[in-house]
Structure formats: C-alpha cells, structure tokens
Image 1 (cartoon, helix red, strand yellow):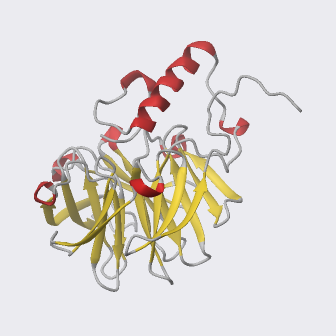
Image 2 (spheres, one colour):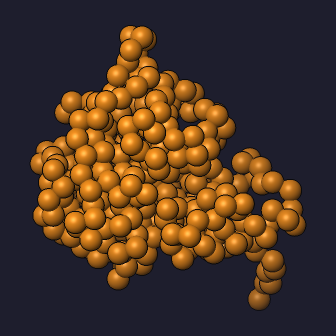
Length: 289
C-alpha cells in the first residue's frame, strides 16, 4: 500500500516520502514520548492522504494519516476544527468522502479494521460497516455519489475500484452494511496501485490517482480510460487522495509528501500548498542572523 503506516509496520509498496516518514517516526518513537495532538497546530499536516472539498462553504477536509486525525480548514489553510481518529475508535485513516447534505457526514476508510466509518463533523460515530465481506481488504480513498447516495472505494491491494450501495438495516439513519453494485480492475489500465478517488457527478466520470505512476486517470463509470495526466512533473510524487471541486470543475489532490495540489481536469497545475511549512518532523536547531 502506498500510504504511510505506524512505525512498527512500514509496508513494502509505498512512496519514497512515506518511507522517510516511517523512518523518522520510528526514530522519534525511541527518543521521545508520544506527540500530543494539542502540541501541533492544525495547519501542519504531516501526511495528508485524503482531501474533500466542501462546496457548501468552500472549505477543505484533510486527513493526516501520521497523527492520525481529520482537519477542517479554510481554502487558505486557516484552521477551523480537528478531531482525532480515536474519537471514533479508529486506526489509520486512508480516505475520506463528504456527504454534503444535512449535517455533512464524513465517510472514513479504516483499513486497520477493514471497515468504513461514518462520522459527524465532530468525529462522533454515525454508522459503520465491514468491507472484508465485500472483497475490499484494503479500503483507501472514497468518493460519494450525490446522485444516488452510493459510495466508490479504491482498494490498492486488490487493484480494484468498488461501487457500493449503503444499507441501513435497523432504519436508524446510520448505515450498517453495504452491497456491491459494480467493480472493475485497474490492472488493464496499467495501474497496480489505485489510491486517490474522485467523482464528477455531472459526467459520472471517475478520477483515480496512482502514486507509483505519478498519474491521475480519468475513467468512465465502467472503468474505461478517457484521459490521464502527469503529476510528478509538478511535484506530485505521492498523490494518494483526490476530490472534485464544484463550482469550477477542478481536482484537489492530497500528496503524502506534505502538499495539497489543485489541477484542472486537463492536467494544468492551479495551486500548490505545503502542509508542513518547514518540511521536517524533527527540527534540531535554529540560529538568527
């Protein structure tokens, strides 16, 4: 998997920036006590793995897998709020999707427990369901389809994009299961590591990022390739989260190399924001000239 994991189990298939992050985190774990969430500004996102554009107020939801937590920020990066994965008893965060109706629930991929959790904007649980029984062993980024309330899930281990119908068996307003509507393999596309996922509801086209290829693929709903563009040439070497922005029809990209990028659908870079301004987890010294 191409995302950073807790120091004790760094994966083999991972972006270079995530390797460095695991090494640094392992060193820190031996030398210092655990980092408190309260000691780190909300603006600093060490490993942004997923991003969601909130068209209701033009803000962003960003998942930081290193801490792990979800931050709600203004478009310019100013903090609004944050909650830790512990709030819903979660493990690593691997993907987000926003349900932009009502209170604005978030769906969160939790691969450590092979599940997808639904939370309110404060992180309080509001439903969850297992993904293993659907064949999804490594849920990564998510995309919400507002047209029918369905959910797309990327699985980089299975190399498959899954399309799910959510179920509320006890009719309490919180999803507690899902059925498989459709799925397609990304292997015929040359993608062995599908991570980021976004949906254009107007066209029904899916956008999938593969950090091993440094590319974003535009696909039909059935998985046929429509177009693609390179992200590596613009510094996007670890893009593992995508979101569709409306109005404007742009793509927001989360790069585990501590960047949030904005691209047009044709591949033009429109914005680049660093999420950890000093580019280090362990500053050792400073001098004033």
